[in-house]
Image (cartoon, rainbow, N blue to C red; front, top):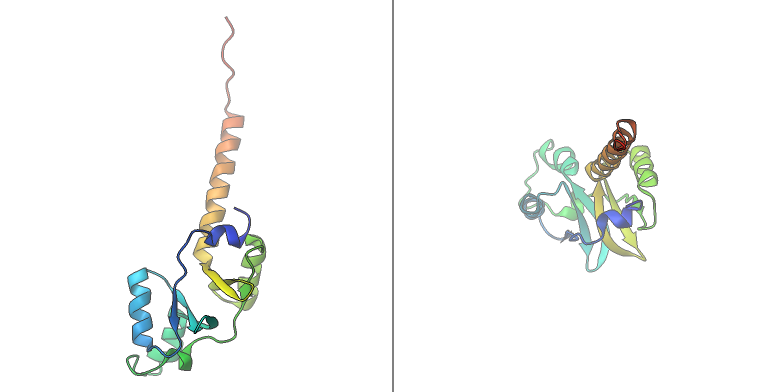
Length: 146
């Protein structure tokens, strides 16, 4: 699993429509246990709405999430990756743009969203496997000969 396409393969793609209320989007995010969701107009991704957007653009300004439309508060300056991009490149992109979620888009089609947690989990699994392999090498005892 070396590309972001590998990370999202087989996963559900979650999205909401830009004309939906913030409250509807938050209900959906809670039901799906996700921290960010793609915002669509028809079949085209036009933004992303995250927990950070909720806090910075809705809660702190004391706006009503039941009447406020996603189009008014979503992040529209999209940073995206293609499925072929490496996880390392995606992580660098996320760090340089100070974002926690990255949309994966293939030929203008949303194929998924990854989070920093996804990349960190992948890295931990790889490192754990490497450690097990090194331990097996270091502590290998050949069978006794008869």
